[in-house]
Image 1 (tube, rainbow, N blue to C red):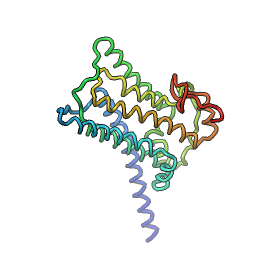
Image 2 (tube, rainbow, N blue to C red):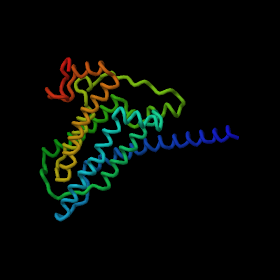
Image 3 (cartoon, rainbow, N blue to C red):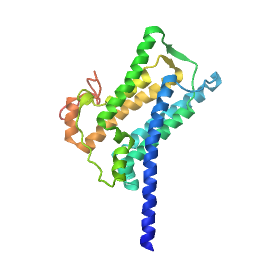
Image 4 (cartoon, helix red, strand yellow):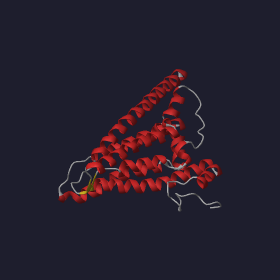
Length: 257
């Protein structure tokens, strides 16, 4: 009897795991399309001047709602604790779902502004719109270099679904990673900066997420150094975090530091 109950529980857990993993992949696909529409249109309903403070504080809070969990959940201690609770094979799926839900909150709760900082026309507009779309291409390229399946949790989850051991993830710089350490973050910066119409609400998003990208880049360096040790420190000495970044933690790391 106990064995039958145990088998039944195992079947249900596996069924739930399969559904959750598949749901995460669907959520990721929806989020990518939604993010494109959101950033393309500087989405959000217009607000009257009397609601300016509400728009300001609300939008800052929404921007942070994505930025803070997206960085903190990747801290080694936090990731390890969550992995122990739900299984390492499901951390990527969990991370993907949290990221998608936080972005959905941004999309649904964002308030627009009719205050325009700049609006481009003619060839400057076409140039910036082209740069925006090139940033999307660069983002996809950069994610493929590191393994898109790791971004959605698919790689670990699919191994679990096939009852295979988790792969050991190795760091082998290729492509853009031979020139800079954070091509994904740089591409994402292009998504929020290259807009032909910069409204005040878009400027809030750009400002908060640019700060997140800078801090997140540093935290990612430290996280990879934590897991990889001297191998990654040597990589930091050879490759800057970003082009033209000559000093500071996002430049090339000095030997002995």
